[in-house]
Structure formats: C-alpha cells, structure tokens
Image (cartoon, rainbow, N blue to C red):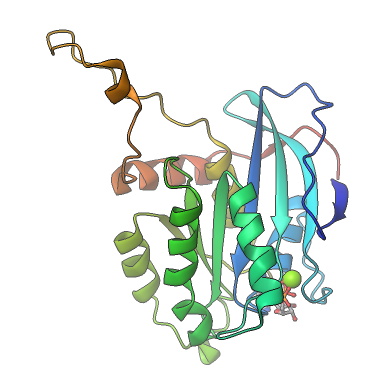
Length: 237
Ligand SMILES: Nc1nc2c(ncn2[C@@H]2O[C@H](COP(=O)(O)OP(=O)(O)OP(=O)(O)O)[C@@H](O)[C@H]2O)c(=O)[nH]1
Ligand SMILES: [Mg+2]
C-alpha cells in the first residue's frame, strides 16, 4: 500500500506502473460510518479500531482482477454531517468528480447516515452525467444488531431504486465482502452493446453511447463472482 498524500488538493497519481488500467475509487458517506475502517480493511486486511477522524487520505496499490493488472487509487473522504459545513462537502464533491467509481457507505446503527445516501448518489450522477460510474452501497457495522437503526430490507430496497450494487458488511468482523465490493468496482466495464447488423446505420453524432442505467441482475451476478473470487494482490502491504 502506498500513501500518496493527504487530500488538500487531489493530484493525479503518476502512472509509474505496469498496469493496463487505473481505477480511481472515492469512498463517501456520513461521519463515523466506518469509511476509513473499510478502506484500511481492504488495503491491509486489518481492523485497528481507532482511526484519525476525517483523514481524507489517498492510497494507491496494484491488484489483479480477472487476470488483469489494475492500479487502484482509493480516496478516503471526510465524513458528512446532515446539514454539515461546506468544508467537507467541498472535499467530497471534488472526490466524486475525480473518481471513476464510488463506494457509498452508511452505518446500520445511524439512520441519518442512511438518509444521506440518496443525496450523495445524486451528486455522483450530476458529477458524471455522461459516464457510467459504477457505485456500490455498503451498509457497515452489520454485526451491531442491538444498535441497528436501519432494517436489513431497507438497504437492498434503496440500492435497487438507485440501480447500484449493495452489501451489508462489518469492517470489524469480516474482510471478504469488503474485498468483493472493491473488486467489483475494479472490473473492466462491459463492452458497448453491438449494433445489430441489419439495423440501419446511425449518424455518427448519435453513436455516442448514452449512459445506461445499470442492470441489477448484471450487478448482482458480478458481485457474486467477485465474492467467490479469491483476492490476489500484486503488491505486498
Ligand atoms: N463495531 C464496529 N465499529 C466499527 C466498524 N467500522 C468502523 N467502526 C468504528 O466506528 C468508528 C468510526 O470509524 P471510522 O472508520 O473512523 O469512520 P469514518 O467514516 O472514517 O469517520 P470520519 O472520517 O470521521 O467521517 C471507529 O471507532 C471504528 O472503530 C464496524 O464494522 N463495527
Ligand atoms: Mg475517516
């Protein structure tokens, strides 16, 4: 794992690797939902339990996904409060604009963090109106059943409505689902649908692919694949 920099401004990570692709992932959500814990779990497999608040740190590493070497950059972002100050909102907005894949996080123990998700998803779509930016929604702290404020059905229902993949996770208890979520975002985008041979040829201006709403079946299938694949790491952490 390489720590690139703290994020006062987001610099492009120099392409000094052998990877075919670079995937930039922003991790966003409410304050204290476990964003840093999830990123650290993904990158190091460890749960430390005590993290610097609002760290806003950019990390990079290389991973192998489906046999392809992929350089990933993960931007941990400061937590948002409902009605919170502009400072962190500004940083989150820049991270979303910078990213080409997004992890949205709420905590099952914090109803307000769940209520933020719709707004954050809207920001992702507004920041990338012409691109299909893959999004995974993670419901963290799933092991804290006695503190639960968000029912287990509400997360999948919200994810379905937004057309994003969903997973309940626990940064403190388990690693595999978190790996699966990040790996899902690193998978190569599906090739654009082929034009039927007997269809009339369209004018060039209309060949720009319109962003399609993500197919839930496809997302679920890819999530299952990612879950069943063993993570392979190219760099030691
Ligand atoms: N029980 C439990 N605690 C967790 C889990 N994930 C994170 N925490 C705890 O929740 C607290 C906040 O975790 P962070 O990772 O700092 O959360 P964050 O979203 O990065 O917080 P900010 O950066 O301040 O917005 C810490 O005390 C973590 O130990 C989890 O899955 N289960
Ligand atoms: Mg944090």
